[in-house]
Length: 501
Ligand code: NAD
Image (cartoon, rainbow, N blue to C red):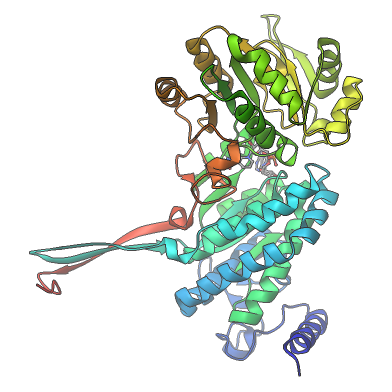
């Protein structure tokens, strides 16, 4: 029988058994015993962490109940612990291979569900999961001296909770899975409600393959219909030791109030500063590449440009020559009215803008229509001259439209960049060949990512050196998350012996 047929038949049998019993299919014979038949608990496993019992309602990791999802993930962690680093490496390989192999289908499904972003870039983001580091990242640190040897090891926490955004649901989930499981943990996800179906689909498929290849069940679990209540239940579950939150200000605040340790990949509003020493063509191309990527949904994506007056016209000409279209002031005004809602400020008379969700991550054609302008179908990005207080500058707008603000001096450019970044300490970009300007901006902005003379994705190893993650921990300071981020450092000391010379 061919391997394909064997796999197919096993899946069909598992599916039928699952429907009959309402449980996930048994792992293959070399698996650790994990269900009721072998321990005499009658199908109910005792939850070590909470003393409760695990219901078997979840199928291939997809649960309706948050407590059950956490308890099952805890069981998954215990199974992984038994199977060791080899099983972790296998899971990492499965996730990377499947994300790439399914990129076209899953990218399409995610776009159909969320209706934000671009299909080509949704696919690209899944093809890139292979750039997330794996188990090889965890090298122990050793000391050797007159008093023996000491080893510091990077060890797992147990169950990690992952909260994922609507902007890149399957990519963030997949990158988190690689990082978290490479470190030896299991994971329970509360995805964004408007991107939960595609996330559950990926979890189901990953678990099927993980069970088939390693015998481990429920290493990844997810809430099928996530809510704020399921978030609270997950965060308060005893088995959950660590949170990994990727999203905007509200979820970062909520995570920090749970009392659990939280790794927070928070919001950004990345400014770009362009001075008169740079190559304007290179700067324009990089701005287009970064700001147009997935219709500017990336948290690292270029959101506003400050440019020295002496080079501003040249930069805008180069933008127009390389696929961007400039809006005039009337068109900008029409688009601004459509894309933002303005509420009166309290007392001071200043109105506060909030982004109209109908425009987040939408195609250039939709923005152009709202602006009342016809643009060529291959237009990558819109741009317009604005002042520094404009809503497109101040808000994290996540649209393929970038405001350009003229500044008179380098100092003004850096100061305005700092103000527009709102102290998120996320990402900033400079186009300059003057090392003093570059250094001054790096010091002033104090961001987690600082990209010089390239597009923002270079900060994640795409066109620059480095590794990838879609969760960049900004307010909590862990930076680009990697397997080490999800470990506890434990020290093992041998006194006076085992040093070999
Ligand atoms: P969002 O904040 O609306 O949602 C993110 C997640 O948090 C979702 O799962 C959502 O259900 C949950 N959530 C939101 N408010 C919550 C609350 N009060 N309590 C509990 N859970 C809550 O974000 P989004 O629109 O999906 O994604 C875009 C935002 O995420 C942007 O601000 C972007 O900068 C940020 N982001 C940051 C990174 C990073 O690596 N730093 C990566 C991607 C996105």
